[in-house]
Image 1 (tube, rainbow, N blue to C red):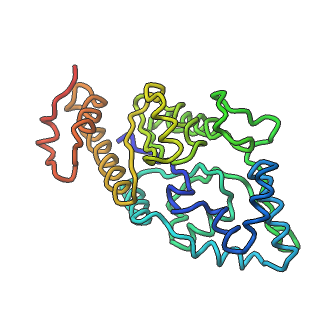
Image 2 (image 1 turned 90 degrees about the vertical axis):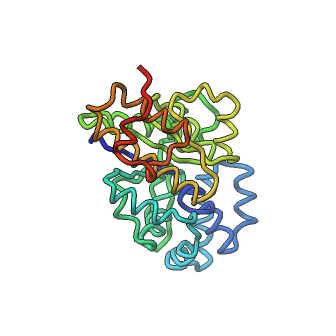
Image 3 (image 1 turned 45 degrees about the vertical axis):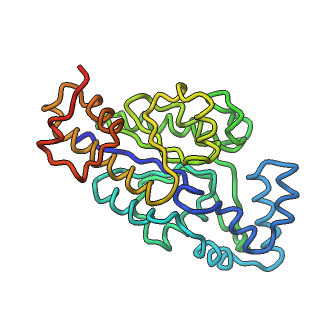
Length: 282
């Protein structure tokens, strides 16, 4: 089995809100944050707000307590655990930060499911202040796809190129990428036709895709709510695993997968014998 690598965005894909806004709003710094983001990049504004919180006596434990109350997308915890149990390699590519993501994943018992978290680095200094830094050095973070949808501190397309090279090295894993924001458009553009993208419908990345769907080479499988994400993603994983395990019985494994998806195929309702009878494009 070649295997499956699932790459998740975090905010509004795993978490049912934006983690930065959740903390800023929950701890009473919305007005300051809005003022800062009107004049500077989001990541820079978060750095300043964390400093202001610290100067006003808000501790790292206060921030962590706030994060633990943030809601997950319904069904996402079970989806992640099942995908991990099915042998998928799970990674995160997010414009949040290490402390926010790890705190939330630990709280829900999900951190060990992920082999890699790509995000903005963060450290707690000797005074207990949380410092958030850009993922990429600002001077060299121009978008690999020459888009204005990537923020100055992170081009997810650059990250997905490295992940893609890793996935194709030796074991040739198929990639499934899930995301909702404008920054997820660049990495989705970088994935080839053997891969899959799962944009959240009616969110910014979906709107960008709809402007010209032909630009996306990967197979598009949209979702709107957690239940739909769970059903679509796990059926896709099971379908890929089944076809890879029985590749010798198919003339064209990719064609089987794409035909099944186009037919809204539900793998859980299909026996191996029925799966082998699927039409194959020669």
